[in-house]
Image (tube, rainbow, N blue to C red):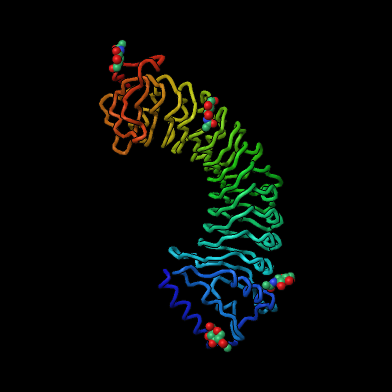
Length: 410
Ligand SMILES: *[C@@H]1O[C@H](CO)[C@@H](O)[C@H](O)[C@H]1NC(C)=O
Ligand SMILES: *[C@@H]1O[C@H](CO)[C@@H](O)[C@H](O)[C@H]1NC(C)=O
Ligand SMILES: *[C@@H]1O[C@H](CO)[C@@H](O)[C@H](O)[C@H]1NC(C)=O
Ligand SMILES: *[C@@H]1O[C@H](CO)[C@@H](O)[C@H](O)[C@H]1NC(C)=O
């Protein structure tokens, strides 16, 4: 892509050089700020971003600098309204250095992006003064230190993405009170402490806190507007409360949550709750919940009792490594053999019955694993993952009931 954009930049450069009367006058303050911003950054080898940032008597940042958009020059001296540091092109190595507090002097900024690279050091707390800012994204760099609480002053902010950096310390409660915030991504950092309570938050659609060191429970009242919630790969614990009603994606996997799984967890087309400490039987609630075509992963918990009928509608169902007992429900088996359910993992439970359909072969697209239960599997569980191990059934002493009948016909 870089080879395509280079001639275009050159072309624009020639046009603007030839018509210097088209020059926009950037305000002196913003020009000084850009100059200061450049001094703390440089291109990584293979990146060619800052080479367009040349300051001299005829230079015109608004038209020749990469990564800059300015306000309408007919309304007086232009202001920088959008600053993108780095090209964002796939494969571009990005920038090295640190973020200058002078960014905060670009007070007309509505958008600030730092594309992936090796920018390190803190997020300047002064950025909290950019009160026009709507979009702030600093991702895939090495930015460290705490998230400045001052960012809670960004009253117009609708997207904050600080994912994949080295940020530490707690999530400032101020971030959970930003009135316009729709997207909050703090994934893949080293954040700790509890998730703050959300206040005055009637807009938030997307909350991604995965892969940090966050502890404590999920706050009892999450914004009811949430569609996407991931806290996967933290150290969160405690019981779940009712989840927001319109969640389409829920990922609570790899934490230490306990207690029952609330029915509201099954309103999401992707419900990932594996590798926690959820306990108890699942209530059958076919009347209130439909998981038709969805992905549900409850594996590696402490769930017990019978498999509930309503989950038979799922397209991919992972229930392995729990303490489920009883027979596999007929609806589950029928849906696997008709190709409606593509994955059914039940290995490493205490199940003791499998109603084998007469005559119909397992569809090639189906993944079925029922090994290491309290029965001799009536079908070859050849689609088990390697983690299921080689043993076809549990030792008898572990089983309250053991089923030797190798085929029950539907
Ligand atoms: C940024 O603004 C402050 C306050 O107006 C000023 O003192 C400082 O010199 C400015 N920095 C740059 C690099 O322009
Ligand atoms: C200013 O910089 C531009 C872009 O690098 C260059 O083409 C131009 O000759 C320079 N002008 C002066 C007066 O140095
Ligand atoms: C789950 O609970 C059991 C017993 O209650 C405990 O021994 C185990 O450490 C817990 N696991 C996690 C991941 O919290
Ligand atoms: C059931 O099968 C197991 C394993 O094949 C065998 O050890 C056991 O004796 C069988 N029990 C009965 C009652 O057939």
